[in-house]
Image (tube, rainbow, N blue to C red; front, side, top):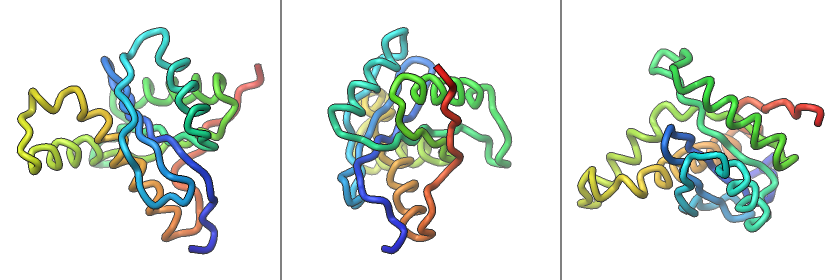
Amino acid sequence: MSGFRRGARLGIDVGKARVGVAKSDPDGLLATPVETVPRDDASVARIAALAEEHSAFELYVGLPLNLRGEDTPSTQDAREFAAALAAATGLGVRLVDERLSTVSAHAALRGSGRSQRSSRSIVDQVAAVVLLQQALDVEKSTGRPPGIPVPQEPA
């Protein structure tokens, strides 16, 4: 496990209506759901508060690319949200490929016997768990931080 940086992280699945948030333990063993934050003017502040509450040193924001790895209409939204988080928290924020996280989340929930409708409130959290777990696994296997760092804008 050389190269793995110790410390809690948050995984963030940005949607148009809701933002799913997951956290990891400091050893990066397990990603667990935290909460679904309504997408509004207070979302960034709420996630900044969660980052502080869970002593996160880094945030991973899912970057929704299409299956060919190209931008989608949601990609720019995720980039802007990530930049706002970087400015609000002063923490490292990294954009990680989340191509399959929502699909995996729906599949996992279906596998657990939940209907699409009853899953709606937690699917964002589960997608955040999936993207965070993938990011942790990438760092453990490569020894390098996953994704692309979001530049810190001067205040």
